[in-house]
Length: 453
Image (tube, rainbow, N blue to C red; front, top):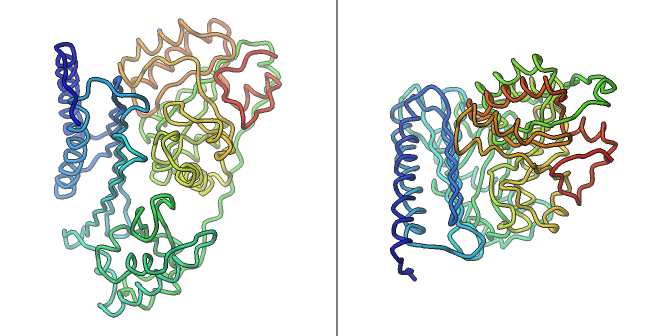
């Protein structure tokens, strides 16, 4: 039911529309540039987040542009005539991730939108582009013939049903794994086998979340075309020993913890790492699980150099709006991704928007780190403003929130460090600060700062 707007409401909507229009132009322009683009908007009525990679291929770019515009327009049409709504706010998260396997480029576009009701709506869209033929392909393209694809269907049906701790309706699963190409829109060839993703409602209920299975190559090699077979059984062994520094020299110093969300970014995060030694600084990165695999070397470097790697969940969704299973999936998927890179699961979690109930803390079972200095770097994108806000509000035990996906945020943080170092501050990770403060982190507590005990 539409709500009638008063004069003030119409002015507000018009202002919001102009902001969104400008942001939309910025998004499309960003795809022509050499760097990633990240849009984060927040109003009284909604939060909106869009992650864009750089896409140089014109065919792929066109389809991605069309998808982003369609999803964003649909969401904004739902909220443009609403003057105000009761909490929770509307929420929109769109991510575009690109991965390559041999000559195939996989573009995975995922949208979560909340406009009221019991839960988010979700849209999964995958594109697969063969750089040799310069055409888009589907899963059948990798199999020898139609019969081989039918055999894959039977294997997939078995693997879904044998998932532990799941009680599936067999008829539902059978329909969702039938040998139609629409049932196999989302897949990835990985080191260990063929990964198939089934969005909610395809083989199980919304409460069960997305269903993901991995079929080992030994079961499907004979079904694949020769060039896509993989008989290797070797797994990469992760063995990373991070730098550990002597903390005794910081015991009597004022401490401040810089934390960076939403990354990593190959360009901006590495620029930050290149400059931390100037200020004898270590920081904490709260990374998105969806960005881990495409930024492995950056995460390895950050960890090796003694910085903390924490979780910011997989898809940056409001955890308070999720079912128990979906919340745990957001946490587990990120932890598994990080462990696959540095060899250990993170212990620190920063929930998106800082939202997590006590029940959610129990489900996550991680140390919750929030903040008490927020320069709104994502909003203003001004390095001097970022630096000044941090310097003005700095105090012993403070936790600073910034985002390493923005160059201006990284530059602003470094400027702040330069000044705060003169004021006697030491820059430490969350775990270092807890150790220096004699704090044993507790999974039932949300840490906004760490003052002396």
